[in-house]
Image 1 (cartoon, rainbow, N blue to C red):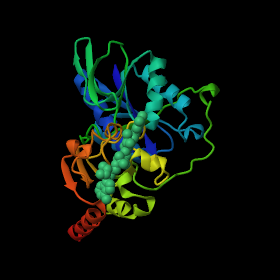
Image 2: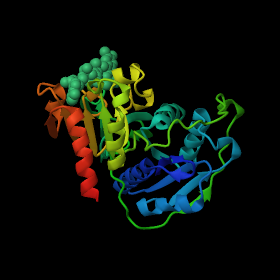
Image 3: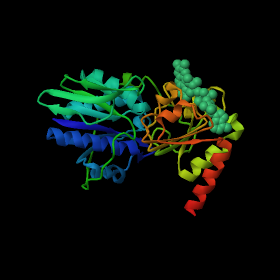
Image 4: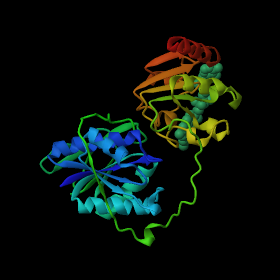
Amino acid sequence: MSVLVYIENTDGQLKKSAFEVASYGKDIATQLGTEAIALAIGDISSDELTKLGNYGIAKVLHVSSADLKTFVNQAYASIIASAAKQHNASIVVLSNTFSGKGLAPRIATKLEAGLVAGATSLPTVSGDSFEVTKTAFSNKAIASVTVDSSIKVITINPNSYAATETGGSAQVEAFNAPVESSDFGTIVKDIVRATDKISLPEADIVVSAGRGLKGPENWAMVEELANVLGAATACSKPVSDAGWRPHSEHVGQTGIVVSPNLYIAIGISGAIQHLAGVSSSKTIVVINKDLEAPFFKVADYGIVGDAFVIVPKLIEALKAYKG
Ligand code: FAD
């Protein structure tokens, strides 16, 4: 028996969420008295992969092939399921990212496994009983789910489980998974990077703004605040619908779900559909001129006032603080 964790990378660099799933998988393995094995696919150096040893992973299976340099959902799912079978994995852990969301149900089907998407904690295991909490109804509720299939597939939200350094080193092994031509139903011809900015789902700090900013011409101060803080930028849905900002920045029920350490909301009312995507942020700061704005009810810190006065002052103060 083992726990298999799927490790994501961007251009050969392991993602921050990769270390989080490694730690989560290792902690479940410790609970079950077994080992956590990692699987990575793509053009990644052994030096990069051995970093996983520091997060409790003893063995990394590496699939490297020209066909698999870029993400192909069906093929990647076949490889992960095949590795799970070969290594007798009873639990497969992935990050609840765009690719993890696509892979997890496919892997669960191939393995006839139960699937828990968006787990928020380690499972409670006692005898045959396996229970895990997960977000439900767009983050408005936490559900406690009992899984009784012998194999389980779990995804965890980025930033929801701390990556803990344990020391140790990982051994990297080539893994040759048979993939069928039918696994390549999608062919990636080219990858066009929309932005070089910090990835929104993985960002530690997110500076987000809404319709209160009046128009796209006023986003320079949002960008500047984000730059000073090393943050990603986000926006409410009407802002991206109006074309003020790209859709890739839209957070909420119908957009990206984020769980940063710090979420700064500027001129956003805090509608329930917006909160659905941001309420699991560790600290929420709200800047709004309306004291009655619903966002203040979930804010850890609230500033009542005009964003056009407050944000420049905040930037000035942060710059002075940073020297
Ligand atoms: P508004 O509601 O117009 O709020 C603007 C805020 O700015 C106000 O609170 C105002 O007091 C404040 N303000 C104005 N001027 C200033 C100033 N100078 N300084 C400071 N504050 C100021 N929305 C999302 O964001 N994400 C989603 O995923 C999403 N999904 C949806 C799905 C469905 C099915 C539906 C029906 C709606 C969805 N919405 C979503 C829309 C949501 O209901 C709200 O309409 C939207 O979040 C409001 O955006 P906003 O807060 O930017 O704008």
